[in-house]
Image (cartoon, rainbow, N blue to C red):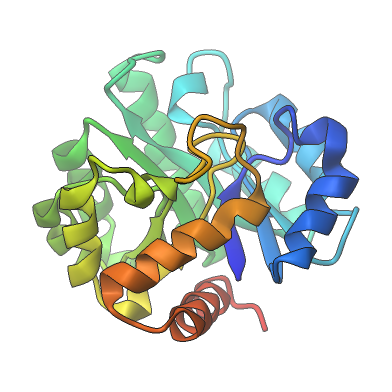
Length: 254
């Protein structure tokens, strides 16, 4: 198993990293991707990736943080090149649900992240909430450059997924697919091609059933994997192999 999206720099995990990593290994996790959200977050991540061979990181500014974290394409590229274990850009994107940052700032930042990912030929990890049309339109404008797109914690509509598939996008399932009221989302994941599927925890957030309401961590990803296997009507060992292979292909890892 691979946790393709978590935040090891967030509490309570950051204060307990040794045990969090050990519990991850005990359930069979082979890689963990710790996602950057701010410039301060990145300073922690470059240290976290040194702790264990299974941990990798990203650089990016979360759409909620655009107003308080200035970024340029040059800065994004320089930060990624600092460390060979920084393997992707993000999370970046659009979140019009909370509007913690202005639409203009979010859109401008998102474009910079996409362009840096294209220049470096590495994946961009996309956050999209209440912004399906705008997210797709921006990504589609870069279609000729063939960006490597990973839709993190995908909760979008089937129509949105269909459009994103025209861009060769990947989709990551989180604990949300285990929630009782997520039947539409499960139907969407049932239709997404197997070779475009990844799994994630988004920990310490979004703990899956039967642990919903608790602080999440990478070791809980097994519950999301079990539900995805049920949704896809595939044996859990097979969906584990599929999602692991997809991660390694997307991120160019062995």
